[in-house]
Length: 115
Length: 114
Image (cartoon, rainbow over all chains, first blue to last red; front, top):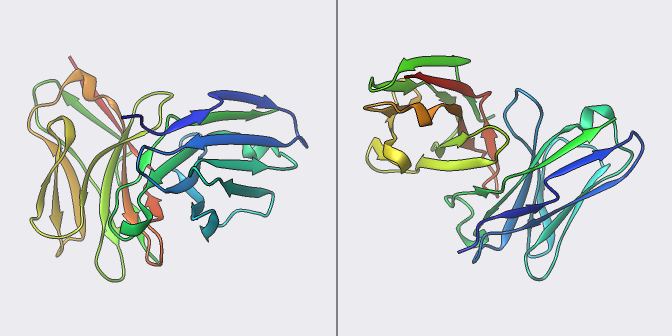
């Protein structure tokens, strides 16, 4: 049973560039959430996708956008990269129908470095 | 607003001794609480959760957590620590609202000495 997978593992970009991160949910899951974990901090919620729509958004600027595909996989796009966007980006999957109590399972993350 | 606090940045314990990693919460409504562990350069691994029912929740790798409503605490425990338990531990609470968005604490680094 495949768990949550993310690609790429590491990424180096320069300020002003754009980046796309990818996530495949755990088998049987239909909901994908994205989190940003800055160095030395806990993960911060970016947004959640369910049925190909953004269901909830955290306190992140519009430079952060996402997409969910019919196979439930998801992308996180960040435009006009800033140095402060350097972080570990985590994808988590869960079951949308059990939204109130279901556990989120996390992928290994993508380490983004902005120079 | 929902929140959790982890008052200790680091906990040191000798191998074989019991360990406790502390977490307190502040919620409106029923608390849905979680513990995750993060090894270096890795994502988060789910350990256990409290939704309702017994105050003592058993999870993976021999960990358990005690929910205490009067003290608004959800401390993580293990009877006998292993060196391999050394990692970063996060307490989290489900936010109020339509999704299962998690709000995380700042994390506690557990160091188990041989």
